[in-house]
Length: 205
Image (cartoon, rainbow, N blue to C red; front, side, top):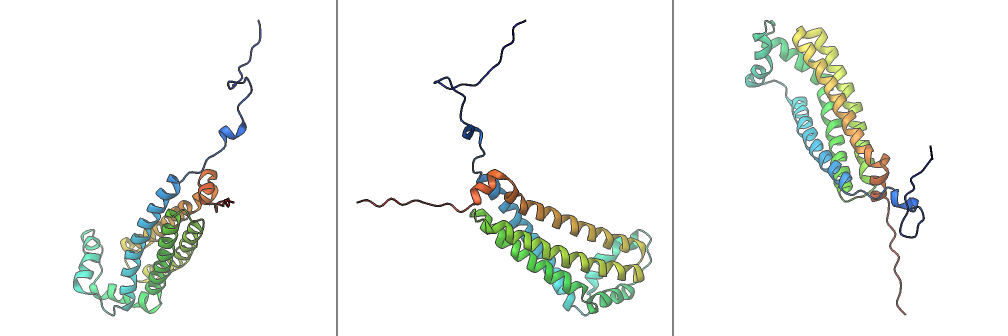
């Protein structure tokens, strides 16, 4: 049996250059990630604004209490408006709402800035977004832990579970946001599009 091999050749009969298969700058990918980061930052900003408002609210309105407690009561949990108000006061006085609100707000602003810069293919965009994700994750997770500790002391099991899930969701969202921000820095094609480009200007004599 005869052996044979297949070799790619161009018109001159030689193998194609390795540069033919080299990664090329990808501008579409980073811009898509930038849009997702901007949308995520806006959602984070709205959430953090609610926490900041809660940190200044001495008393919850009856509408807010009904929204928070109606489903819990329908499921058989026994909690009064006064008991939840005491929990709110404790979380506000411990600074949990303020910590979560302001750290997530600062993180959202940095992620928003990073998203805008990334859309412009600025290499500093992912770095700002990563910094914002880290700040929001650190402050948000610690504040959620504070709220969870208080809920174990003052709330029924259904609300304890809700605060626990909220903490997990906060951490998961920050991990996803951080991974998206880091992707353009680790992907070769995206990184080539972000690297500073040098333009050579030839002076005419």
